[in-house]
Length: 278
Image (tube, rainbow, N blue to C red; front, side, top):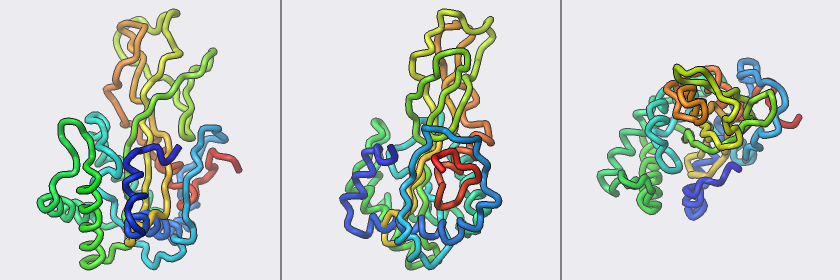
C-alpha cells in the first residue's frame, strides 16, 4: 500500500544516490526516535487497516546525524488545493513530533531556497496545468539540492511529507465509521438541513486524507516510508440529505493530524499503543 504513488518509481530508477536519501532520513529518526516513545501520540487500539511501514534498519544504523530538514515539496505530485492550504500547518506538527523525538529540525527554507534556485536552472518539474511531474527534472533538482545541503549545512537527512487523498468507505450497520490507514473516523455532517435521509447511500466512496512519509539519507537512499490516516475530507450534506460534499474544515482537527503522523512514523519513532498487530 505504501508504494502506490507512481512517482516513487522515479526514485527506483535513480542509482544508489536517490535511494540513499530515503535511508538517511530513517536512520536519523531511529537514532533519536527510540527515546521518544514516552511522548509519542497514544493510539486507540487494534485497527486492521494499519499500514506496515518500511524501515531499513541497516541504513538507519549508518546515520551519524540527527539533523533533518522537511522538504517543501512533495515526493509525488502536488496535493489538491484544499489540502495544500494545510501543508504548512501539518509540516509544523511533523516538526514538533520530530523535535519531541530528539531530532534537530532545520528551517524549511534551507530546502526551499535551494529548490527554487535549482528550478531556475533545470526548469519547474511540475506542469501547473496538469500537475504531472517531469521525472528527469525532478531527479536533477533533488540531486542538486542534496549536493548543496551536504556541502553547505549539517543536515543529515531529508523528510518528505505528502498529504495524499484516497477513497474510503463507511461500514454498514448502526455504527457508521470508516477505518483507513490505522485510524477510525465518524462521518462529518455539514449544512443547515434536517439531517441524513433514510435513503442516503452509505455505500458510495468518501474522500479521506492520509500522511505519507518518505525519509532519505544524504546518499538519497530510502531509510523509511510510512503512511498514517488523518481525516475524512468529505461530509454528509444535510441540505440534500443524500450526498457528500467537500468539508469546509479540512484537516483542522489537530488530534486527528497528530494521530496520523504518529502512525506514519512508526516504528522509526515508536508510537504508544500502535494500532497494528503486536
